[in-house]
Amino acid sequence: MTKAFGILLATAMTASVSPALADDAAFLASFAGSWSGKGEFRISTGSPPMSVFCAFDAATSPTSLSLNGKCRGMVVVSRRIGVTLKTDGEGVSGSYVGSTTGPAGLSGRREGAAFDLSIRWARLVNGDREAQMKVEKVGEDGMKLTTTDVDPRTGRPVVTGRIDLSRS
Image (cartoon, rainbow, N blue to C red; front, side):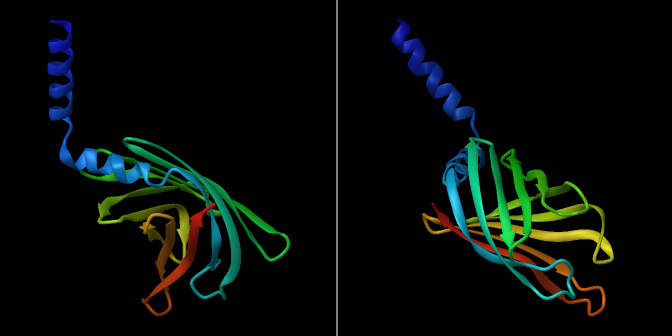
């Protein structure tokens, strides 16, 4: 009787999890581990890019992703970078740490192998408080982080940050 109850309970719990949430759990788990790689950042849409080397540790749960690391550029520039995401099966929300304006809010959704996110800066950046971020899984052992903002002078999108990472 106890074994039958356990099977029934497990079946009921599995059936109650939405397919989107279950799919997100497996996707989030694929980010777990240590990552490192190179990229570029711009201080503003009009500034030249600065090459950086970055290292991150990623922790996951069935509904969340936490990327914490550091990027170094030139000899003396070093900045802590962090992305925290939580999914509910319908959307994604979280925060980004790394901007000189303070922590920024993130919201968006999963699109295939990526999270497409809107950034809400703590203060004005490039003339407004809005930008875009993409956290993308590239194959089994790759990840790409990209931020894009609109140049206030031209109205065109500019990649303000891009980091290509591999499992360490």
